[in-house]
Length: 418
Image 1 (cartoon, rainbow, N blue to C red):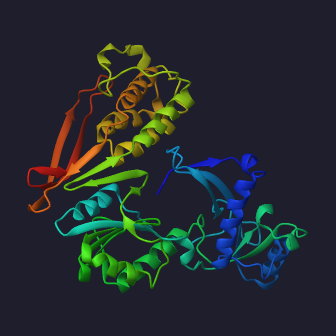
Image 2 (cartoon, rainbow, N blue to C red; image 1 turned 90 degrees about the horizontal axis):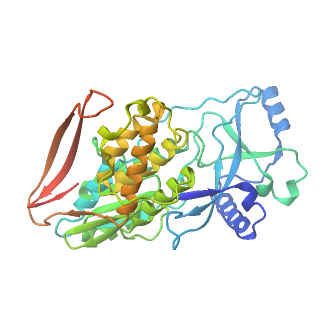
Image 3 (tube, rainbow, N blue to C red; image 1 turned 45 degrees about the vertical axis):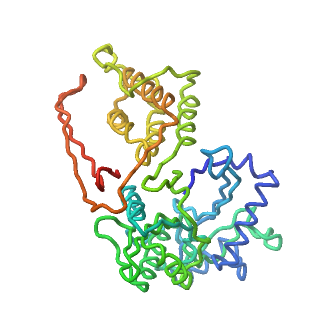
């Protein structure tokens, strides 16, 4: 998965390159049977027919999005169009909000992905990855009532331009529909079951296939597979009889994180994301330059007491900046986690001192943008799980609460993998 930066509609609607991407995306969806143009009717007619027959329906809208894919990397970014279902405004024939099934979807955790990659480091094992092509629409939309979509101008064929608010039937689990993730997840689980895979009770969306000793991690449409090298091709071939996916290859970029494999070491690299996070801070705060910083922490005993009670200037943008930093911290920069956790607690009561603390975190990040996380394991040694716990015994100047934290690592020989 990569980072997408959405382009406003007014900027892409007259851009030939963007419109070409939109057409490409729409043609692919229609070819896959997501919707058809066999029967396109005005929305008012569709609603009238439903009311007259008593047959319930749901009507939503298609939403066209154009973005820069891999926005965090200037060398990798490219135009990408995606057509989604607007799940926030789905109505029945009487104009009331439609009801949906409750289908639970739990994506993999970062820990699950890291455990997968660690397994790939065992002697005789390796890790490969692939993306499911248009993952959601490989599943049927099994909604309780027939669902229709209203076509926007850029997706309406010329022969239907005269129709006011043209609508057609939706057949596949298109991105954005409240049930699509559930239908896609259920289909993937069915496929895994057919191949002998069992989902982990500890790590959702992680499957172990006993017959081939393989571990597969799924995140939306990204698949990472680890286990005995000789079994990868067998598995991918078997999976191809059920799903359409890209040609598998060595693990490179997953969830915006690059991976470099060097024998007994994996290097997690998010330099470009760190650069983008620092630039975001500058953009939303107007900051011109950062100061050198050796740690993400200020000496809080020097902060003015009264400024804990004064609303900070960054109160409206702090959450956006912190969440950007969180993604980086969770995937490759655990040295940022504690400082960001402390700041996230202040979102609803942001102060001038929090402005200063947030600036210090990003000064530190700017000073350490090239830091990378190295995970090492002895491929031949017995491995164990080590859990470390600790407590912060009321050491903050603005509160007297004791907080706790923990870290779980895989230990192999004299080396550890977080």
